Amino acid sequence: MIRAIAQIALREWKRILTRKDHYIVLLVLPAFLFFFYAFIFDKQQAEDLPVAVWDDDRSPVSRQITFLLEQTASIHITHAVSSETEMRQLMQEKKIIGAVHFPKNMEADIKSRHPVKVAVYTNASALIPSKLVYKDASTVIITAGSGVNLQKFMKTGMTQGKAMALIMPVSLELFTLYNPTYNYQNYLVPGLVTVAMMMMIIMVTVLMFNKEWEEGTAPEMSAIGKGHAGIVFTGKTIAHLTASWVNFALVFGVIFPIFSMYHAGTWWNLFVMFNLMSLACIGIGAMVSVLMMDVMLALDFGIFYTSPAFVFSGFTFPRWGMPWYDQYYAAIMPYTPFLDAFFKLYFMELPLRYAGPEALRLLLFIGFTCFIAVFFLQKRLHKTPSHAVPLAAS
Image 1 (cartoon, helix red, strand yellow):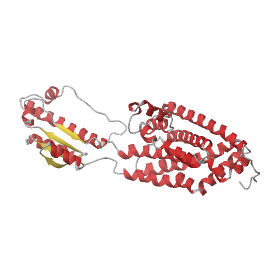
Image 2 (cartoon, helix red, strand yellow; image 1 turned 120 degrees about the vertical axis):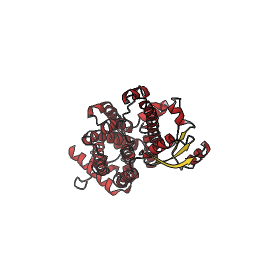
Image 3 (cartoon, helix red, strand yellow; image 1 turned 180 degrees about the horizontal axis):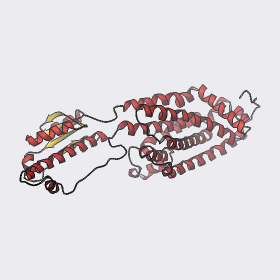
Image 4 (tube, helix red, strand yellow; image 1 turned 90 degrees about the vertical axis):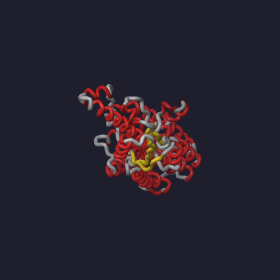
């Protein structure tokens, strides 16, 4: 049995290396895509975003705040406007990502401790840049406003500690964990790379068995596997699983270290979860390949099934905020539990045991799809006349 499994695995590897639709998708395209994704976000962070200033106060305080805004990492003052209409037009023309409005009598109102409303406008269609502009602008404005009152109280002889307690009785300290600088490369690239891995595995494995019947090689496959679906399925699965290891080594051994995305001590935990996801994807592809003997229909299903994986996985939008039917769709994709585990193991650097629930869900995927695939494969092998194939030739 072991020898037959090894022969099936070797035969499948030969098929992968000799068929363009296999080796391009599994071995050539991933290398190009992974480096392409990494280079797109090589800048890592959004810096010097164009921002306009709408200054109706024209006071030393407004000029000082403008100067401080320019010193932040995310804000670069590029325009001065005099009305909301002008500000909106610049934003619609994509010349600015945000704007800050200083109202009239701002300095006088701050010193007299009257409420002051400084408006920060951001283009929320660019979600992360708008958050960065708001974060830096709000920090500068609150700090500068407190500084004006601090100087006023200290001039009366009050100590700095008492003055600060009077100005800001509650101190807020913000901790942004796991991606504090909103680094695009560290956050988006791992997600894009892993979802691409899932899609490529499924797109090739949906051709795992139906191609054999289409090309007339099914009798040879059946003969090598002695007519046992379990042997044939196991051998082919081993071949595709080891092919996926090539891409895992490329990502975590080459791309992540080159682009400084490697988290020491996480690779083994991720390798375990990656194998579970790969086996789940192989199981899904094999199941489709056995049930849909029409190759084009199987490919169409693979595209339809895998295309929304990134959107529905919760990577860019929380799943609990989606309609219930989208949540169910996300639940039937192996990438969803893998992504949940990936956040724990890669970003949070937690031990493998924290990914136990996700590992169990992937094991259920594997058990269900592999059982269906083997069951129907055995039925097809029974109907396939096998011919003797010399062991040496295989």
